[in-house]
Each structure stands twice: as structure tokens, then as C-alpha cells.
Image 1 (cartoon, rainbow, N blue to C red):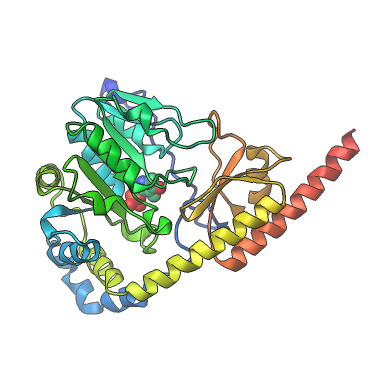
Image 2: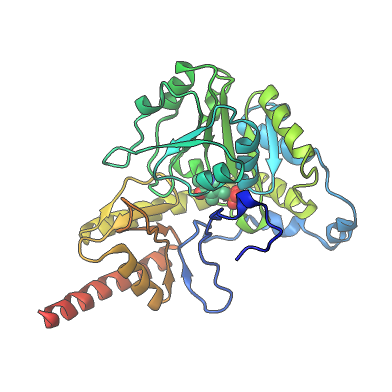
Length: 361
Ligand SMILES: *Cc1c(COP(=O)(O)O)cnc(C)c1O
């Protein structure tokens, strides 16, 4: 029950439900798309005792060093970059300030979009994905709303080629297209290179997944200088110190170690392909993932049932009890050893459940 002080309009707000973060039992944690690898060793080196002492001072509200490093990495100017407390924060700013005509996004996508739309009272239209879970951009061509596309999409993992996103931007230059690239590093492609052509494109990114910094909370957006200035206006009207000192250091240190980044990314991609092939061999339907997770459906067991069986066996994955995707599980790519354990457990529970069903009949 909400207190009597909560505003009427928030009383029915259904908040985002994050994946479980168990604090006690040790699970093989494949449920929130974190990296199985620690951040670059340069991150630990950057967070020194002297830097901890500096926590008495506010962080740099302009994120000067980090923005410069990020701009260099992405091949844009620092004025085209904004840093935030996780990319969820930048998405919140986008819904709050860049959706005059409402918002449009796919029916199966990142669950936070509809929560933000509700929170800020933005009318939202959901566009059904095609039968095979692909995005048909023709469905978006004539919309006036700001378009939100997670690319690769979550929870499907499927990706659109940036050229197609470019066509969508070209189709309506007065409509903003926001591409959420939380997983783009695992797709080896990004819409950032389209930015010189389209000033109605905003690309959102995060250090949470491919840079192993989920707990540090660091997100960013890249776009035209004008759009980024708009977003700074909102940020400075809300929390100018949104990125803390230790996170600024961690982010810069992570960017300063491209070899480590590439090595982790490539290991995850290789493990993804190997795991997908093994699951298909077992009769699973596995969507074509370009992310650090797989979206897969057993031929024999329902999604909820399989989720619970895995949990009993110490493995956490994500299950969404929603239309169209109930029978799927979203499985984060862990280490090769963790994925081997997952496959063993899946083989075992399928045989056991098969036996039990035989006994019943
Ligand atoms: C994980 C994720 C985010 C949020 O990332 P943070 O930077 O940790 O807030 C945004 N969009 C999508 C599609 C995600 O999967």
C-alpha cells in the first residue's frame, strides 16, 4: 500500500523489476547480462587510497577526462558526448525531455522503456516484432513518436544493421531515433558511424556489459552537439554530479585498456557461438544473438519450469512471464566453464523430467 503522501498518479505505477541479485547463496549468475570477467586490471590500479581521500570533493560535473577519452574511442568530439549514472539515467532523460510526440518501441524489448513512459506520462505505442522476433522498420516509417530501439535488442539478442537504422533516420528527419546500444560491442557494429549523416539520431551506450562495470554505474550518449547540450541542460537541472569520482576513474581506466576489452569481448562471442550450437544440438530454439546472452526455448519444458529447475541446481537465468516469450529463457554468457555446467544441468533435467513424465503416463 502506498502511503497517503504519494501522488495519485504514481499509485498504480508498476516499477521495473531488476533480475535477482542474490546476496547469500552462490549461484552461477546468468541472469542480468553482467560480464563474467572482472574489469581491466587498470581499474583497480586507478582507485588508489589517494583517490579515495579525494571523495571529500565533488566529482567533475563536466566529466572532462572521461568524455575526452570516450570521444576519442568513438571517433566523435567531446561536445557530442554526455556521461550518466548508468545508461538507464540517460534513457530517463530522453523520455523526460525528448518525447514531445510520445514514444514508440517494440512489444518485446527492454522492460524499462514502458516504465519510463509511465513515470513521465509519455504516451507510448508498442509495435509488435515480426513472428520471428525481428524488427520490421517499415512499421516505424510513418510514426511521429520518438523511436527507441535496443540494438541488439533485449531480450531477443537480435540486431539490425546500422544502415537500416540510417534509412529510418532518413525517412523522417524531424523525428528522433534513439538507439540503445547496451550490447553493440558484442555485435561488432554500431550506429555511431552514422552520426555525421543524421542529426536526429542519438546513440546510448553503457560500461555495464562489455566493460565489466555494471556495479560502477556508467552510461553515456552520443549525438549532435545540440542534442547533447539539451541533455546536459536536463542533467544540470537534476543532478550535476551524477557520475561519482571513482566511476570517472574506473571508466577512463577501462578505456585505456583496449587490448583487455577486445580479449574479453572475443571470449564472450566465442562462448556464445559454442553455447548456441550446443543448445541447438539439444533441440532448443535459439534466436540469432549478437549480444552477450542467448534467448532460447526448450523443445520439451516450459520457460517457468526450466527457470525453476535451473535455480534449484544453482543456476540463475532470466524468465519473462509475458506473452510471446513465456517459453524462452534469457541466458547470459558466462565463462566457458559456467556454460559447460549449464549445458550439463540442462541435459540432466531434461532426462529426469522426461522420466517423470513417463511415470505419470
Ligand atoms: C543493461 C541495459 C541497459 C542499462 O544499463 P545500465 O548502464 O547498467 O543502466 C540499458 N539498455 C539495455 C537494453 C540494457 O540491457
